[in-house]
Image 1 (cartoon, rainbow, N blue to C red):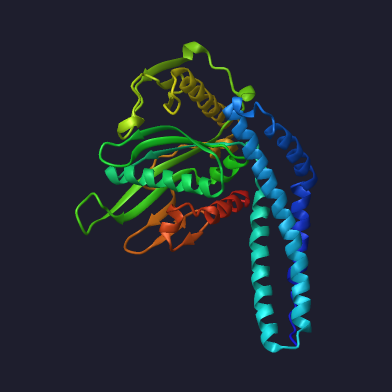
Image 2: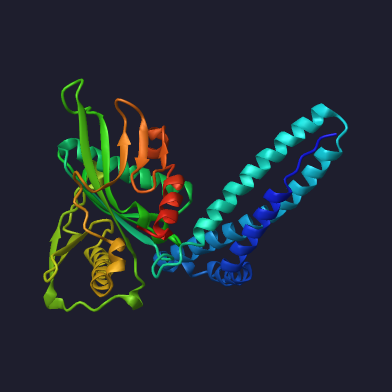
Length: 372
């Protein structure tokens, strides 16, 4: 008969689970699901695409949360039963197999609870907002432009894996390869709280596919993350403080290039803040989208002035040596390492394919830790 004792681990998991439930109120979530389900069932929901995406995204997120809580509760109960079966099993071989299964279940529950515990740390003023991400190529020439496009794909893949709606608002393509910059929205609850830890300078070290063979190239890209504000929260901007330029949307060629001057660039003259939009088909739609992002950026700047602690929302990012937050090394060895948290993995391809949760969770924990 086996002697498997997970009593302390299970008790610790139940205690953590109870603490998380007290922060993330499942009853409130359930009530919210009922309201959102009614809204999602309205026949005119998709008359307003932006609102429909917001409703369906929030509903999906809330349903996933409740389902996760239910799975954890069942998992804890099942684990206790499995341990009892292991200890009462007379067949040593079967007991050994069941003990391995119990160990796997324990590790799985610890990981899921760890993810939920991280979410309880997303209690900042803007953490629950959708996020607007802007990526800019930095030092490194064509390699930097290519790296910026790699980062954009990485975040889009991360959002896709989580089933988060994404809208690419603006893309400025580089001449040889990659992008000069790109702006896109991740319209999911807590997208800003999660992705804000990605803001900063990212560094790539690799054998350049664009330069002389056998030489390593270091390049940089800047990632800016701001919360997207509700229209009712946007700050007023006098018309005489805004310069509006219209131009023809650009792209890599073919049907993606517009034939009318529908793209819009807004410049806030007092601060020099520039926002370009070319995703929508009409100039009016692009101007409205650009204004919303401009208002969000200016609100962040205002908060920065009022409270230095808000600097993390959209701090100064130079995209060059000395201030990088993460290194992606492809040669002479394979590694991605976050320089703030120390979190690292040895499979860059997996990271570039959107496997970012480990880095994001570590970043959220690091941000909440008392800093020296």
